[in-house]
Length: 314
Image (spheres, rainbow, N blue to C red):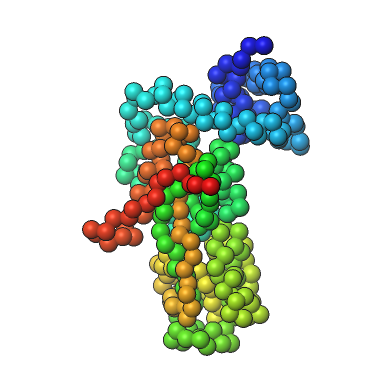
């Protein structure tokens, strides 16, 4: 039996990423019957159904999942070799790039990223995907996102990681209801907003529990988006990363930051992508632009950041 050609393998990779025959046909600029025919050939070649239709999605089998990573990396290496002689020109690139961010990441990192794209005179179709901490690696390997920013510390040989910034937590409240000086009893009688840790920031929830403050939680929300407006209108307090608190204070000048009376640091925010060999020139350029955009201004002149750009180790 003959080996599948590159077009068939590319169809497999795109179908795995998009989980839709129609979307795959659109991405590859072919008809849906062509994708269905190619899938039939691939099923025959690999002796497996590869994808099963469930509701409105084409769900990969275990065999397809095992095939995806090596085939994806092989195609990326081929694409890189073919285009190696070409100098990537951001200004002429109009393809789609996908950025994985949490809700809090959209609020703090997306503005400088968009400003950097504007300065580079680059106009890709940027798609932002909400990526929870537990799904970052899966979405990157699957190809749903090209680059992701997360506070989760991921250990995987399949990923590339670079440190973005340290994370220090503070308390935030309204100027109309200030907190006392930092001390063991500074939260006595105060009520809290608790934000879900699905984005990876588990420190606030852990601190409330460890410091015996969990019974003082008056409001639990999924995301940080409405928190600054809630604080401005109430006497509630929230624990959150300092860099986020500073953004919120810029939006709501009546908010005030207070230091915590206990150690308040967690794993750093990091930028993740697939390994170097798996990236296209556009993805490499985008990763570099994002990293520069989100680290600019954090470090003092003469003390540049030294991000760890090595693939993650098991």
